[in-house]
Image (tube, rainbow, N blue to C red):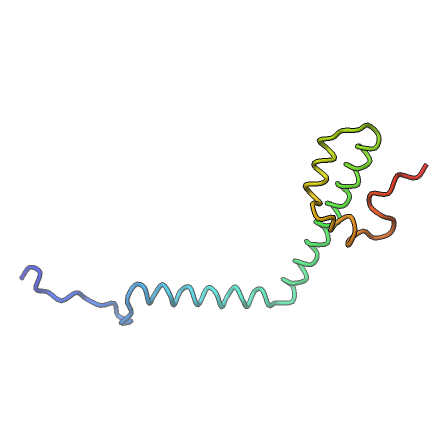
Length: 103
C-alpha cells in the first residue's frame, strides 16, 4: 500500500545525523593522533624556522633598499609585514635587523 509502509532504518540503527557525528569524531581522533606525533611537531617547527628566517631576510632587503634610495612604499610594506616589530626585535639573532649597513 502507498504511504503505509514503514521507513526502513539503516542496519546500524543510526540516523544520518548520528552517522555523520560518528564520522566527524573518527576524523577528529585521526587528526589529533597525527598532530601528536613527534615528526609532525618537528616538521612544523622546521617550517616555522624557515618561514621566520626567510621573512627576516626579506625585511632586511627591504630595509637596505629603503636606505639606498628612499622608497616610501617599501617602508610601508616592511611596516605591514612586521607591524608589531616581532621579527625585527624578538627573532633577530646577532646584530639588530634594521641596523644601518656597515661601511
